[in-house]
Length: 154
Ligand SMILES: [Zn+2]
Image 1 (cartoon, helix red, strand yellow):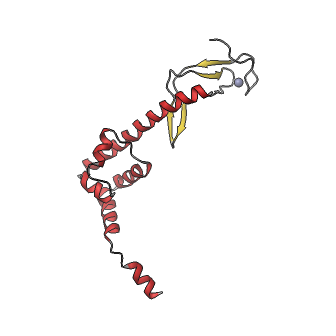
Image 2 (cartoon, protein in one colour):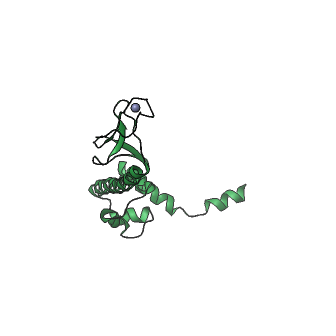
Image 3 (cartoon, rainbow, N blue to C red):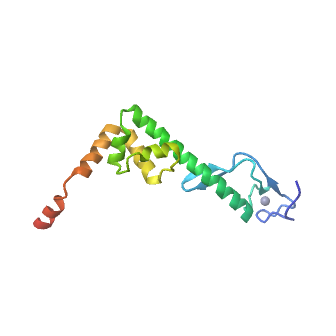
């Protein structure tokens, strides 16, 4: 490893910044903490641990984290769908209540990345599937009369 910079811009240690590739480096990405690929070389100070992300490293990490993000969102969705399936909740019923097109949840199992909103809904429903789904079904089947009555009595 060659010294890249004379002195670390963060701590001032002399000749301490080198390219490092190692596991255990995490970055926040759209709300998730994701691991930077072990083999991605990033300039790092051996003295204070500060990392220096240049445009080249940022481009490489963006590509890697985007793929990791999609895989992790999909993994979590599949786990929740399996939990709901085990609780005898049909995919079609979920799709109806969540106003998703028929077959959309199958796409998530194969390739689609679920949105944060959809994943959040699945988390809440999976905690108490029957009660939460019944509550949503009631909410969406309530006729739109309440508004008119409130207006008339005001
Ligand atoms: Zn340093």
